[in-house]
Length: 169
Image 1 (tube, one colour):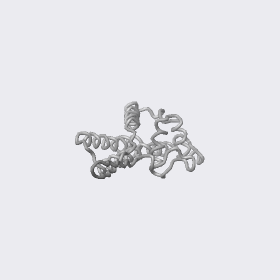
Image 2 (tube, helix red, strand yellow):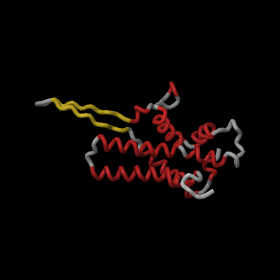
Image 3 (cartoon, rainbow, N blue to C red):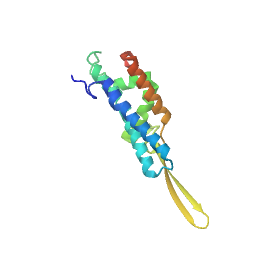
Image 4 (cartoon, rainbow, N blue to C red):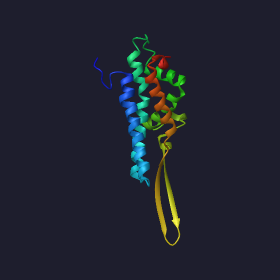
């Protein structure tokens, strides 16, 4: 198989997931330098954030499909089975999955969902009544920069260690 950005889990991590996080960090840096962000700027930030989170969430699928035959996983041991196991082993991967799946499915874990897509953002309405009435709406995305920073370093460390056992179950 030719070496491409989708040819295996390591290539995917480096070229897609880390690349999307780098794009997010670069955007945040640019926006922070600019200051005074408007709603469109914050929408863009949220979009880059969710794109990075979704990319991180896909890593376990890439690993599973790359190694399922080598590990002799049965039909019952599907990608969902692997995802549950690896998320239990690495809570950081579970935290990323919670955000990604809330975004992707609107809620995480059905009726008993702890996180809903709407929890990822807030609209703040401010009414100022002095001489005249002034109404403003501010968009406040609930972005967990600490989580994405931890995930970024986790996957960079994984690539540097070159040790697949980190993702074995």
